[in-house]
Length: 442
Image (cartoon, rainbow, N blue to C red; front, side, top):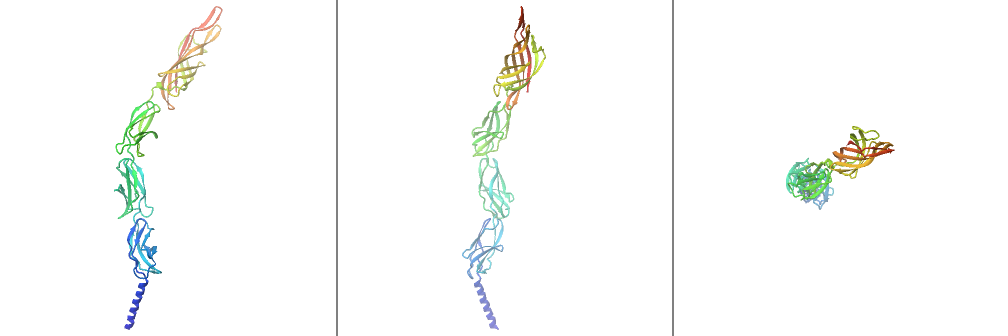
């Protein structure tokens, strides 16, 4: 009986030794892990007893994720998700035999590195930077923003943007963002270099205005480096660029009595400031005497004085009224200058050239208008027609300072006129004249 028991112990011991030599020993626990947001590198010590291993099997959370040859004792898992916990073991394999698992190691991947940093808003003293949230994994608990190597702010993980204020105009800054969850920090983002805008000009004001020019003055920025130059805008149109040492500009070729809006922009290192506050200013209103007289006019006339006997196909009497349309053909495009008037008086056309002088247009011509009744019938008279017009009002018409109202007199003078003879009888018409007040408005 004792012999049988002893034999059983010996056989069990031999069986254990055979099993021990047939199954590889467990590899050492993974150590010296290198962890990033998207990879985990494991290292371990090889199996030291049992059959030689053919390979090592790597399991993550109970599932095999890779294998390496027997002479390799490291593995990089590149299928992980940022900011996530994992458990790893390593198993030695010899043919179909498997060792016991190594001791388990737990790791957590780093938060995803912020990417796509960009400037989304810039001013003279502030910058807003933004970046992309993680494409995989979870949003971190927070982001830490570093400016020029110094941490300046922390924002929640759901807020991938930051506004940095209190900066110096026209100055470059370097920004780096790190994602943080608990004690885990991501790798730093690529550095973003951003520059604040120059400060805007100050004190924009009017220095002088004329009917066609406006002179502006301003002061340079009160902070930041000196300006390289300034851009002057009339409304939304850039009208000039001047050097940084120039603090004034005269805008020419403008329309009289017209309001314009101006802003000025600082330029530094190719960057432009925000526009200065807008300045609204009007060109001067010219005197009516400088208005342009042209075009077709409705004219009203009224006889104010009759001297002698004037026949216009019927007697002319004081108080008689007329309505005509006269055409003024100016000899220039702007301003006062000679104008040829084509009109009708008592059904007779006339043309007279008027010359301007301080708001008054004068001219005369000789043309038949009136008649003389003599012994041998009616005689046509060569009359002197004198036109005297004074400009009363003016306004902008199609961007031209133009006459809009005038008044004056039209005088038709008849000379002493022989009217025929019969025997010793001679007839004549004495000198006579008629003055008509005329007005034109449009």
